[in-house]
Image 1 (cartoon, helix red, strand yellow):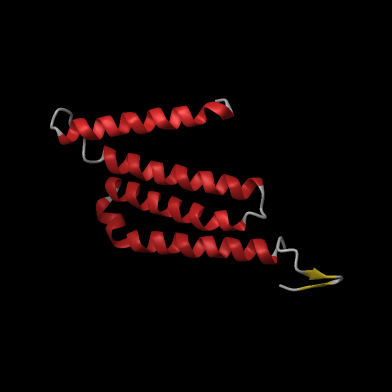
Image 2 (cartoon, rainbow, N blue to C red; image 1 turned 30 degrees about the vertical axis):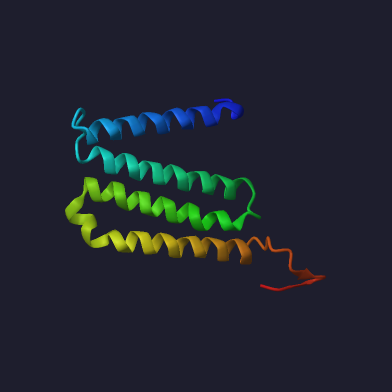
Length: 127
């Protein structure tokens, strides 16, 4: 996919999903109750992956870890709740809050281990 055409693909995808939702609301099209949550979960995971790719491409963008991991955790919980309702029903909050906590641990480790803050005075670095 060319970088200049990615907006067209996203726009067509949004239009198709909107059309499917409209047809389902008009009772002209029926989708299984498991498919929508899994698709929405995958969209959240893809959104998280976009932020994580920003972080991986440049670790100085530490802020991308927070929305990236959080969106991925929310997507994982949405998709898993549709596929494993009895098991995930008890762990849904743990997955989301654990994802948020993991994102801040990643930011902390980037700061301490990677020292990408640039707050060094000569030989003495502040951690």
